[in-house]
Amino acid sequence: MRCASAVFFNGKVYTLARHRQMARAIAVADGRIVGVGDDSEIKRMAPRGAYKIDLGGRAVVPGFIDCHTHFVQMGLDAMTVDLSHTKTIDEALSLMKESAKKTPHGEWVVGTNWKESGWENGRFMTRKDLDDCCPENPAVAHRVCGHLSSVNTRAIELLGIDDKTQDVERDASGRLTGILTESAVSIVRNALKPDESRKMRGLMLAIHKAHSLGVTSINDSCSQGDLAIYRCAEKAGKLSVRTYLNMPSDALDSLLELSYVSGIGSEWLKLGGLKIFCDGALGARTAALSEPFADDPGNKGMLVHSRKEFDDIIMRTHEADMQLAVHAIGDAGIEVTIKAIEAALERRPRKDHRHRIEHLELPAVGHLKRMRTSKIIASMQPNFIGEWGGTDGMYLARLGPRRLVRNNPFKEILNSRVKLVFGSDCMPFSPVYGIHSAVNAPHDAQRISVSAAVSAYTRDAAYASFEERLKGTIEEGKLADFVVLSADPFEDPKAISSIVVLKTVVGGSIVFERRKR
Image 1 (tube, rainbow, N blue to C red):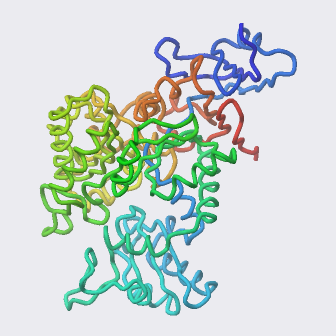
Image 2: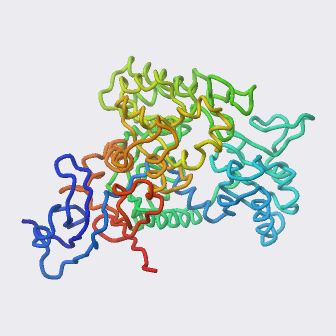
Image 3: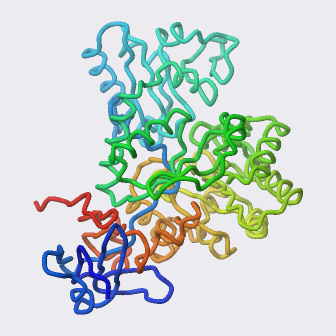
């Protein structure tokens, strides 16, 4: 019998392992699980001096794996004006105004995560709105989706945005409204790139938030520059969230020159797949749809790349034995994506590619059968339903009632035997909220069991990064990553939203413990 450095006992352990689904205690040593079983047998593994942690009968699940984040950016956003909880546009603009008062003239005022769907008087912010509240500063307010931003006149002048700039909105007279989408948003992002010191601070803030919410691993859709920050954090022993990096498609040529292979790295930091955008977002009305938006009848969204360019990126990535993580939201964008992956597989078959479609918010029934045949993973965000589902949310406004009942069809995906994994896209970053949203979704095609929802954030999520033998379940030999919850989600599914994380354990060490009130 192997000796443990710590044992966690008197718990209700949901292992999610195939052979033993329930246990009472866990033994850990050297960052790994060395025993799972009853209290008495696990306690015998603890020599004198070993840590013994009483779980108080609480529910324990494997550490949550968020399969779609913008992790560093989430930390950076925490240092801006947070507009996520505002109830009206006036409240959001008031926060921007207060920040402008504290910001030296000429310096940027940056707001993040506004969502007009949550405002009583829901509409996009405009140039005039930001001119009124930030008259002496360039100002930008990024919508929560990341696909739309609003800027004021000073920002437009500073950024050099004019009539020739793509993806900018104009009013009936041809004047810029200050609303930017897709490539125009990148102009702002590039102008405000943070230095490495600020990025490192953002990463540390994101890690702390992850621990408090039970997230022990992430798949980060990062920028090229983020890799150096992660490496620096790992070298300094500060990277305490296991990270799988999906690199941006504009880095493809550089990656091919380096003979990049998905999965290279350590238990803390691995190189993942290639993230490529097919279409935009529903919130920004840029997702590619086969029928127009319900609230914008002349608009079917957009494809980010030409078909030839998109197909070429897919083929080159696939032939280089890299994993694909393709952002496709609308049914037309999903069709383009599946066709491109099918063509790549036909030209060069690969048994275990694990290509992924990120978001997959509006698949057609036929898409799911083809995804199953091609073994494409559905990487989705159940929290989107919590934010925008139901009979009064953004999905209804954008899609109308007929398409509303089929968007994010988690149950149909599982019934089609397509691998389903969950992430948050940081909107918001919270697995418990995501699980609650999937289990208590408003429409039948969306609702799934607690077991399926938790698995999509743990066991199945590990599969998406080729790490199912390393983590995702609580069983001997795997990484000692697990979470202690305030209540059992399997006992009262309707109350999942009230559950909080009491302890987060990474590599056998408690990295977060909620203080008693």
